[in-house]
Image (tube, rainbow, N blue to C red; front, side):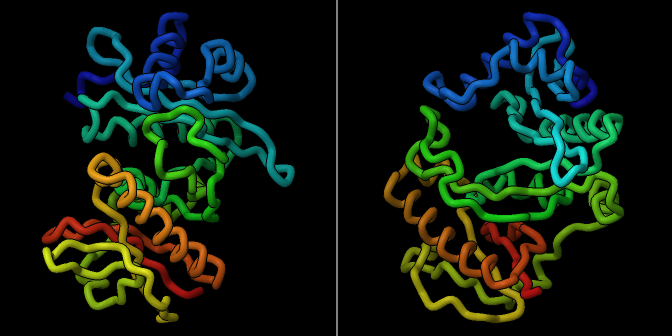
Length: 275
Protein backbone atom coordinates (compact mmCIF):
# COMPACT_ATOMS: atom_id res chain seq x y z
CA UNK A 1 0.00 0.00 0.00
CA UNK A 2 2.85 2.40 0.78
CA UNK A 3 4.13 2.17 -2.78
CA UNK A 4 0.77 3.29 -4.09
CA UNK A 5 0.97 6.67 -2.32
CA UNK A 6 2.51 9.74 -3.93
CA UNK A 7 3.51 12.75 -1.82
CA UNK A 8 3.69 16.08 -3.65
CA UNK A 9 2.61 19.70 -3.42
CA UNK A 10 -1.09 20.39 -3.90
CA UNK A 11 -1.69 22.06 -7.27
CA UNK A 12 -5.20 21.91 -8.72
CA UNK A 13 -8.29 23.66 -7.34
CA UNK A 14 -10.07 20.38 -6.67
CA UNK A 15 -7.06 19.23 -4.62
CA UNK A 16 -7.27 22.32 -2.42
CA UNK A 17 -10.99 21.64 -1.98
CA UNK A 18 -10.20 18.05 -1.00
CA UNK A 19 -7.83 19.41 1.69
CA UNK A 20 -10.68 21.53 3.02
CA UNK A 21 -13.07 18.55 3.12
CA UNK A 22 -10.46 16.47 4.94
CA UNK A 23 -10.17 19.20 7.58
CA UNK A 24 -13.93 19.07 8.13
CA UNK A 25 -14.04 15.28 8.39
CA UNK A 26 -11.08 15.27 10.80
CA UNK A 27 -11.95 18.13 13.15
CA UNK A 28 -15.71 18.24 12.60
CA UNK A 29 -18.14 20.14 10.39
CA UNK A 30 -18.44 22.88 13.02
CA UNK A 31 -14.70 23.55 13.20
CA UNK A 32 -14.21 27.27 12.61
CA UNK A 33 -10.41 27.44 12.28
CA UNK A 34 -10.30 26.00 8.77
CA UNK A 35 -7.53 26.81 6.30
CA UNK A 36 -9.42 27.85 3.18
CA UNK A 37 -8.29 26.86 -0.33
CA UNK A 38 -7.48 30.54 -0.99
CA UNK A 39 -5.25 30.77 2.10
CA UNK A 40 -3.46 27.51 1.30
CA UNK A 41 -2.94 28.54 -2.29
CA UNK A 42 -1.63 32.04 -1.49
CA UNK A 43 0.59 30.69 1.29
CA UNK A 44 2.29 28.38 -1.19
CA UNK A 45 3.25 31.41 -3.26
CA UNK A 46 4.87 33.06 -0.23
CA UNK A 47 7.07 30.28 1.13
CA UNK A 48 4.41 28.01 2.59
CA UNK A 49 3.85 24.32 2.00
CA UNK A 50 0.57 22.60 1.21
CA UNK A 51 1.33 19.00 0.31
CA UNK A 52 -0.90 16.01 -0.21
CA UNK A 53 -0.69 12.24 -0.10
CA UNK A 54 -2.47 10.80 -3.13
CA UNK A 55 -3.49 7.21 -3.88
CA UNK A 56 -3.13 5.50 -7.27
CA UNK A 57 -6.35 7.18 -8.46
CA UNK A 58 -5.04 10.63 -7.42
CA UNK A 59 -7.49 10.79 -4.51
CA UNK A 60 -6.27 12.80 -1.52
CA UNK A 61 -5.78 10.59 1.55
CA UNK A 62 -3.77 13.03 3.69
CA UNK A 63 -2.30 16.53 3.68
CA UNK A 64 0.02 18.86 5.56
CA UNK A 65 -0.14 22.66 5.59
CA UNK A 66 2.29 25.21 7.00
CA UNK A 67 3.73 28.67 6.46
CA UNK A 68 7.15 30.29 6.72
CA UNK A 69 8.04 33.41 8.66
CA UNK A 70 10.78 34.90 10.83
CA UNK A 71 11.63 34.37 14.48
CA UNK A 72 14.48 36.33 16.07
CA UNK A 73 15.54 37.32 12.56
CA UNK A 74 15.84 33.74 11.31
CA UNK A 75 13.51 32.00 8.82
CA UNK A 76 11.35 29.33 10.46
CA UNK A 77 8.35 27.28 9.40
CA UNK A 78 5.12 26.67 11.33
CA UNK A 79 3.37 23.42 10.49
CA UNK A 80 -0.27 24.29 11.09
CA UNK A 81 -2.24 21.19 10.04
CA UNK A 82 -1.76 17.53 9.26
CA UNK A 83 -4.54 15.03 8.68
CA UNK A 84 -4.84 11.51 7.26
CA UNK A 85 -8.07 9.70 6.42
CA UNK A 86 -8.96 7.12 9.10
CA UNK A 87 -8.69 4.13 6.77
CA UNK A 88 -5.12 5.15 5.85
CA UNK A 89 -3.82 5.78 9.37
CA UNK A 90 -1.10 3.58 10.82
CA UNK A 91 0.65 3.24 7.45
CA UNK A 92 3.31 5.92 7.93
CA UNK A 93 1.61 8.52 5.74
CA UNK A 94 1.75 11.22 8.42
CA UNK A 95 5.50 10.73 8.75
CA UNK A 96 5.97 10.80 4.98
CA UNK A 97 4.08 14.08 4.78
CA UNK A 98 6.31 15.55 7.50
CA UNK A 99 9.44 14.37 5.71
CA UNK A 100 8.26 15.95 2.47
CA UNK A 101 7.52 19.17 4.35
CA UNK A 102 11.03 19.03 5.85
CA UNK A 103 12.54 18.65 2.39
CA UNK A 104 10.58 21.63 1.02
CA UNK A 105 11.37 23.83 4.04
CA UNK A 106 15.09 23.11 3.70
CA UNK A 107 14.88 24.39 0.12
CA UNK A 108 13.45 27.63 1.51
CA UNK A 109 16.50 28.11 3.73
CA UNK A 110 14.80 27.47 7.08
CA UNK A 111 16.30 24.99 9.55
CA UNK A 112 13.53 24.75 12.17
CA UNK A 113 9.87 23.72 12.00
CA UNK A 114 7.47 24.40 14.87
CA UNK A 115 4.00 23.00 15.56
CA UNK A 116 1.72 22.02 18.40
CA UNK A 117 0.07 18.79 19.47
CA UNK A 118 -2.09 17.56 22.32
CA UNK A 119 0.13 15.90 24.98
CA UNK A 120 -2.63 13.33 25.58
CA UNK A 121 -2.55 11.99 22.02
CA UNK A 122 -0.27 8.94 22.23
CA UNK A 123 -0.13 8.36 18.47
CA UNK A 124 1.09 11.92 17.89
CA UNK A 125 3.59 11.71 20.75
CA UNK A 126 5.09 8.54 19.31
CA UNK A 127 5.40 10.00 15.80
CA UNK A 128 6.77 13.34 16.95
CA UNK A 129 9.33 12.14 19.47
CA UNK A 130 10.34 8.73 18.14
CA UNK A 131 9.62 9.05 14.44
CA UNK A 132 10.80 12.62 13.86
CA UNK A 133 12.99 13.55 16.82
CA UNK A 134 11.28 16.77 17.89
CA UNK A 135 12.08 18.68 21.06
CA UNK A 136 9.35 19.86 23.45
CA UNK A 137 9.73 23.62 23.94
CA UNK A 138 6.79 24.39 26.23
CA UNK A 139 3.40 23.39 27.58
CA UNK A 140 0.61 25.91 26.99
CA UNK A 141 -2.68 25.61 28.86
CA UNK A 142 -5.73 26.14 26.60
CA UNK A 143 -3.62 27.52 23.77
CA UNK A 144 -6.62 28.01 21.48
CA UNK A 145 -8.98 29.19 24.25
CA UNK A 146 -11.94 27.14 22.97
CA UNK A 147 -12.44 23.90 21.04
CA UNK A 148 -13.34 26.07 18.01
CA UNK A 149 -16.27 23.84 17.15
CA UNK A 150 -14.09 20.75 16.75
CA UNK A 151 -15.57 17.41 17.82
CA UNK A 152 -12.03 16.04 18.08
CA UNK A 153 -11.05 18.75 20.57
CA UNK A 154 -14.29 18.94 22.55
CA UNK A 155 -14.34 18.15 26.25
CA UNK A 156 -10.61 18.30 26.85
CA UNK A 157 -9.63 21.93 26.42
CA UNK A 158 -6.80 22.79 24.05
CA UNK A 159 -3.65 22.30 26.12
CA UNK A 160 -0.71 21.87 23.76
CA UNK A 161 2.97 21.12 23.58
CA UNK A 162 4.89 23.49 21.31
CA UNK A 163 7.49 21.36 19.56
CA UNK A 164 10.64 22.40 17.78
CA UNK A 165 12.08 20.28 14.97
CA UNK A 166 15.66 21.28 14.07
CA UNK A 167 15.48 19.54 10.71
CA UNK A 168 19.21 19.46 9.91
CA UNK A 169 20.36 18.50 13.41
CA UNK A 170 22.48 15.34 13.73
CA UNK A 171 20.23 13.96 16.47
CA UNK A 172 17.21 14.35 14.19
CA UNK A 173 19.04 12.59 11.36
CA UNK A 174 19.81 9.66 13.66
CA UNK A 175 16.15 9.46 14.67
CA UNK A 176 15.03 9.47 11.05
CA UNK A 177 17.48 6.64 10.36
CA UNK A 178 16.06 4.63 13.26
CA UNK A 179 19.22 4.89 15.36
CA UNK A 180 17.62 6.59 18.37
CA UNK A 181 14.68 4.65 19.79
CA UNK A 182 13.49 4.42 23.43
CA UNK A 183 14.31 1.34 25.50
CA UNK A 184 11.36 0.60 27.83
CA UNK A 185 13.48 -1.69 30.03
CA UNK A 186 15.75 1.24 30.82
CA UNK A 187 12.90 3.07 32.54
CA UNK A 188 10.98 0.15 34.07
CA UNK A 189 11.92 1.13 37.64
CA UNK A 190 11.59 4.89 37.12
CA UNK A 191 8.84 6.50 39.27
CA UNK A 192 5.44 7.11 37.64
CA UNK A 193 4.31 10.38 39.19
CA UNK A 194 0.67 10.76 38.15
CA UNK A 195 -1.10 7.37 38.14
CA UNK A 196 -1.87 4.35 40.29
CA UNK A 197 -3.28 0.89 39.51
CA UNK A 198 -6.90 0.40 40.57
CA UNK A 199 -8.60 -2.79 41.75
CA UNK A 200 -9.25 -3.85 38.16
CA UNK A 201 -5.56 -3.51 37.31
CA UNK A 202 -6.12 -0.38 35.24
CA UNK A 203 -3.95 2.76 35.53
CA UNK A 204 -5.94 5.75 36.78
CA UNK A 205 -4.83 9.37 37.33
CA UNK A 206 -4.16 10.34 40.95
CA UNK A 207 -3.32 13.64 42.63
CA UNK A 208 -0.30 12.59 44.66
CA UNK A 209 2.76 14.51 45.79
CA UNK A 210 5.09 15.11 42.85
CA UNK A 211 8.59 13.81 43.65
CA UNK A 212 11.85 15.38 42.53
CA UNK A 213 13.66 12.29 41.20
CA UNK A 214 16.25 12.98 38.51
CA UNK A 215 14.37 10.75 36.05
CA UNK A 216 10.62 10.11 36.14
CA UNK A 217 7.61 9.16 34.04
CA UNK A 218 4.25 10.80 33.27
CA UNK A 219 1.60 8.39 31.98
CA UNK A 220 -1.11 9.13 29.42
CA UNK A 221 -3.90 6.87 28.09
CA UNK A 222 -3.19 4.76 25.02
CA UNK A 223 -6.20 6.43 23.37
CA UNK A 224 -7.60 9.58 24.95
CA UNK A 225 -10.39 9.65 22.34
CA UNK A 226 -11.59 6.20 23.49
CA UNK A 227 -11.46 7.38 27.10
CA UNK A 228 -13.45 10.50 26.20
CA UNK A 229 -16.11 8.47 24.39
CA UNK A 230 -16.46 6.21 27.41
CA UNK A 231 -16.58 9.05 29.92
CA UNK A 232 -16.10 12.77 29.30
CA UNK A 233 -15.40 13.21 33.01
CA UNK A 234 -12.66 10.59 32.95
CA UNK A 235 -11.11 12.20 29.88
CA UNK A 236 -11.03 15.62 31.49
CA UNK A 237 -9.62 14.05 34.63
CA UNK A 238 -6.62 12.93 32.61
CA UNK A 239 -6.25 16.47 31.28
CA UNK A 240 -6.17 18.04 34.73
CA UNK A 241 -3.88 15.36 36.07
CA UNK A 242 -1.29 15.57 33.30
CA UNK A 243 -1.49 19.38 33.11
CA UNK A 244 -0.51 19.54 36.76
CA UNK A 245 2.43 17.19 36.26
CA UNK A 246 3.76 18.71 33.04
CA UNK A 247 3.56 22.32 34.20
CA UNK A 248 5.17 21.37 37.52
CA UNK A 249 8.18 19.64 36.01
CA UNK A 250 8.73 21.75 32.90
CA UNK A 251 8.67 24.79 35.17
CA UNK A 252 11.46 23.23 37.24
CA UNK A 253 14.05 22.62 34.54
CA UNK A 254 13.01 19.09 33.64
CA UNK A 255 12.96 18.17 29.96
CA UNK A 256 11.08 15.49 28.08
CA UNK A 257 13.64 13.08 26.67
CA UNK A 258 11.46 10.36 25.12
CA UNK A 259 8.07 8.70 24.88
CA UNK A 260 7.39 4.99 24.77
CA UNK A 261 4.62 2.41 24.71
CA UNK A 262 5.27 -0.56 26.98
CA UNK A 263 5.34 -3.62 24.69
CA UNK A 264 3.82 -5.89 27.35
CA UNK A 265 1.06 -3.71 28.82
CA UNK A 266 0.42 -1.07 26.15
CA UNK A 267 0.79 1.66 28.78
CA UNK A 268 2.17 4.98 27.46
CA UNK A 269 4.78 7.13 29.16
CA UNK A 270 6.70 10.35 28.70
CA UNK A 271 10.15 10.20 30.30
CA UNK A 272 11.48 13.38 31.88
CA UNK A 273 14.97 14.14 33.15
CA UNK A 274 16.16 16.95 35.36
CA UNK A 275 18.44 19.29 33.42
